[in-house]
Length: 378
View 1 (cartoon, rainbow, N blue to C red):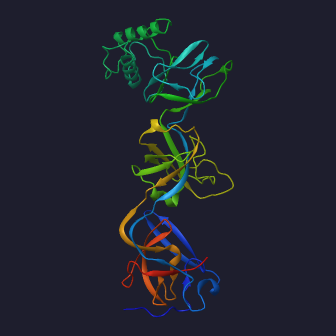
View 2 (cartoon, helix red, strand yellow; view 1 turned 120 degrees about the horizontal axis):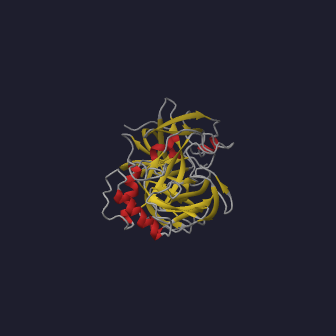
View 3 (cartoon, rainbow, N blue to C red; view 1 turned 180 degrees about the horizontal axis):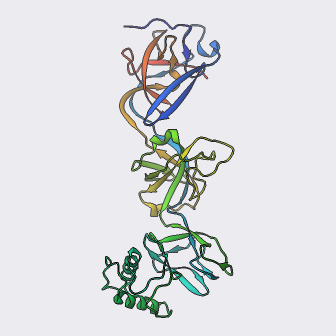
């Protein structure tokens, strides 16, 4: 059944009305707020809308384009284990692998080993724990303790022998014990982001020496909490790098809305948190999202470079859609569009679905692909 002619009380949803799109979980809510009626914008002298656009059938995506910052994974500070003078430190941008030097205190090297438990005590014969297992795994990987059982948590005589071999290779006293100030454990290879102390500085326990990160490239950005559903862990993204190149990746983590943002959708630094900032601009709660690249070794742009991340979001297959600007707020409630054909315009009531890329999914018995709908000339 054909709808009647356009009623003067109907208003363009965009132009005479303001549309507020609020993403809540995975859905969308639309509210209309009346503004002044500008008939000159809405209608020509013959009553037809000033412009039209086609009703399209196809895939519609709710994907977003957001600005982010290129950085490195797992930023943290390395603190001194004890007192002394900093006599050497790895330079900014240096990549340090297992057994590599991070810094020296009083001429004594602090070397990197891999593990999740921090070096919180000296390790010696008879000690037992996960940190001992970590030490054994590293000694085996370096070739100094091939006979060690990496699942045995006890610092055995064989462990002490392997430690002495390691010490001999580095021309240090062969004590068979590992001092708290000899090793720093980290999850893998580390990159020096910046120095927190300079050679010649007097260090103390807990004083930062270096800020380090992992060596894998990542992107971080902040997303309004209301739009967080557009970023789901494991979903593919496309990252546009400086110079125009693109790289594929996946959403690696999505934080929680623990505070307000600082008005910048970028991460604001490799270590920024969801509630970091607090400047005087945008006070909306934001979450921090991290993206891991599919091929991180191929990403060579400088640290802290601005990038654009394309979030896939939800995709609806084979749906009818119209430009968001074509929506009308109907006088009797609900939404519709003006179908223009044969020199006449008529209202067709529609139900709204997903919004994406300036279009909105619509359904209605009187709506078909290829029809033209009116839009205001804003």
